[in-house]
Amino acid sequence: MTLAAPPLRFTPEDLLRMPDSSTLELVDGKLVEKNVSFESSRIEAIILLVIQMFLQKHKVAEALPASLGYQCFPQDPSKVRRPDVTVIRLERLAALPDPNPGFMPIIPDLAVEVVSTNDTVYEVAEKVREYLTAGFPLVWVVDPKTRSVTVHPQGGRPNILTADDDITAANALPGFRCKVADFFPAAAAAPST
Image (cartoon, rainbow, N blue to C red; front, side, top):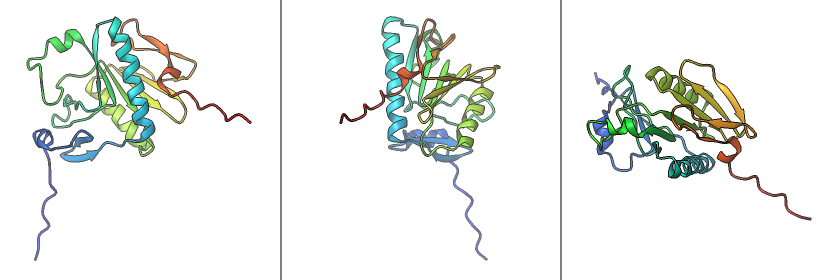
């Protein structure tokens, strides 16, 4: 009789030691590849740039890319997620006991998920649920197909904003305001005839 080997379980420390692990997340001890696509990566970069440009004039926070993993889920201390863009207020960063943690142990003030062509509605909804359950105060879900952003405030109802709407970031980025359209590449011009 041959016994099957138990499934391999990983820890956050294992993930930190893995080369080229910047697109891996850790859920229930399993490595999960973060879905990416050209379009979602391009929009992620634009959003990070728009926020960074605001932060050049208003030094209130740090905006960080998806390469930073977050290990701040009280219901599952070994979970590591990598939102596409995050914002953490400077005063909260200053309070970190270790100024250079492997994974970020504190909740970001804003988490942004850009929907990839390979993401399912269930996967995106599950991440939003995890973030809000952990206490993330604000989550944006950016949908390239509809050129919209669904804003999920902690304890509030989701609100869908379209290209012509203004978007703000409440307490995460006081004074920040832009058009949702600023997060998307300009539409290609029709060829002239």
